[in-house]
Amino acid sequence: MSQRPYTVLLLVPTGIGAAIGGYAGDALPVARAVAQVADCLITHPNVLNGAQLYWPLSNALYVEGYGLDQFAAGCWDLQPVRQNQVGMVLDQGIEPELRVRQLQAADAVRATLGLHLTDYVVTDAPLGVELRTARSGATWGTIQRPDSLLRAVEKVITQCKAEAVAVVVRFPDDTDSDLLQHYRQGQGVDPLAGAEAVISHLVVRTFHIPCAHAPALLPLPLEPHLSPRSAAEELGYTFLPCVLVGLSRTPQFVVRSEPQSGVAPRSHLITAEDVDAVIVPETACGGSALLSLSQSQSTIIAVGDNRTRMQVSPEMLGIRAVRVNSYLEALGVLVADRAGISLDALTASISTLRQQL
Image 1 (cartoon, rainbow, N blue to C red):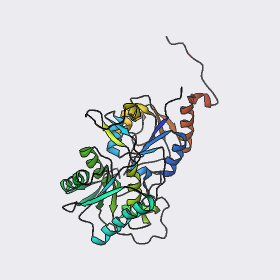
Image 2 (image 1 turned 120 degrees about the vertical axis):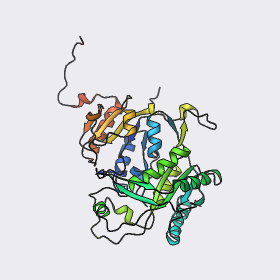
Image 3 (image 1 turned 60 degrees about the vertical axis):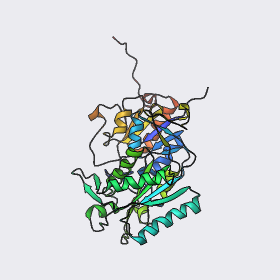
Image 4 (image 1 turned 180 degrees about the horizontal axis):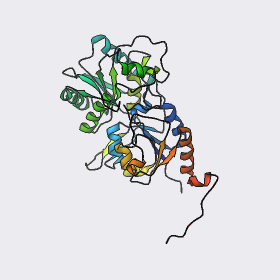
């Protein structure tokens, strides 16, 4: 009898300055490597999004953060799909020329990649995003007109028959801020990430539909000494292509507490109980998904050299974790875990068995 698929959850929380995964798709090489070990890789948009850069991973599931939390808690399951119809919601606050740039990107993925996009909807008011920074250095944000956003999303779902939603919101151009300059040098926190998470969480929580966000910004002044980790966001006028690619194959959410029609048999769904291993930065262990899965049989792997602005170790929360220095070591742990090999057996010394009294 064949073994069930080996499933890995790769977490890099957004907006906390992760040394790997805190920039423009710079955790994508990690995801590609993990996908070679796992039968199924589950991760979130900021791991796979690289603005106009992306990589097709046939065994990876692109799952928004709030939906990921609900999945890990056992409240929602994931139903893989072949292709979603992706709808777009554009902020009324986007200037006409910048709006055209977003629509040209959407037409490009239709013509070049063959994605299924619906008609788009423009919000009935500017959404008014404001950016914030916490004392820890983590970023977050607010949206002045969430009601306008939700009306537009409801319209693209009901009238355009969208099965996943890409939201494009006009973000402030703060080209002179120290936070942005540090980020461009690969030393700071993504100034947009926290606010982006607020937007997608609101949509997913309200409609139980996959969603991801692409900010609309004016091109930045040329920076000759740009960090390679930040460079993907400087290639053009829009971050939209990777979001549309991700949403085109994102799994649908199946809410356990709601009656469902047209849902695959439970044996075809991916559940929290299927997660064999979770990889997370060792100082960012306070997230909802990890806390939920730490109560399961999943192997938790904490990566030391992926430093963040957080200081929440697994030990602080009583989480049993395998500590490793790097993602290269984490890959070795996955290989052993998948093979059912005790990690102790791979060290130079192994203790003798003791009688339990």
